[in-house]
Image (cartoon, rainbow, N blue to C red; front, side, top):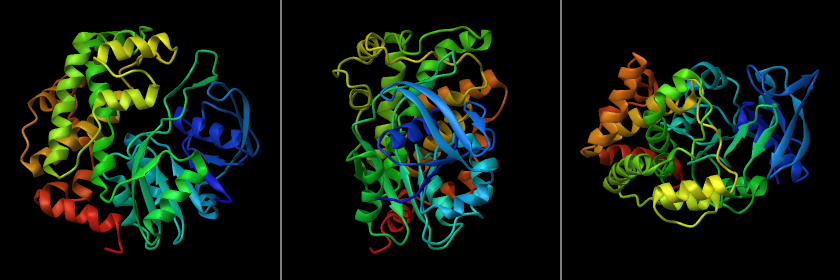
Length: 357
């Protein structure tokens, strides 16, 4: 069992991770450049939780990012659009022997981190621990832990050791892949969020309160299904078989599989639907368009897979926002994603994910 765990990021996912750890008798610490969603006093932070974890949660608050070097395990819970400004400087903080876990890793971020510090173990999860959201009264509503989280790892640890670390923290729900591309492509957020927000952009722009899954109609379901077909086609070209979007929702929300819009209705009936974004400045676009959709489109080019629906959605979002989301993903250049073929990229990720091979 890890003796000390630090969490980077005090948004909903970081706070939910802290709550689950405290519930299980651990004492995590947190650091965030803002921490605006938690009540802070000196070296403590407090939040109120409801749902899968209920009551007040109190954790240590780290005054500086340099203190992260003290912890053997660090869980990174940051949106991908904070990778450059927040996670980038932390690459100078990591020390050899640390295990850095990236929750909901996008755009092969673990490969980027591992290249910055020799001897650091880096694991990437294909999704977050749970779904969660802050309520209007400031409390955090937390849904149950997902039943399955795909992950991959790179560094000096044996794969089983890295897997055991994650299981010790959050239970036996992690499935180890032997290639970093597997959990990257298993992350369904970019395609799901694109289908959810594109029909509701004016709701976001107007600041309207609207239920995310309550408005997941058959129209949204058809868009999401088409995007999922293209995501899995890219994965198949890399030799990877991934769960469908329906399977992901069944595991995440514990509802029966069926047409996506009927699954969404069951999520609403179970009281698990958050409100949709009430602003255009939301991670569902600012994170998922450049670091999810643009990255998946780049992988499709490398693999020679045609993705007309994904490309159309990405172009539409770029047009609506008046910015080039494809150019916002600095990791495409940093990792040289477009500079090789599918076999070469797969080999890079496989070698990194299993250094003993």
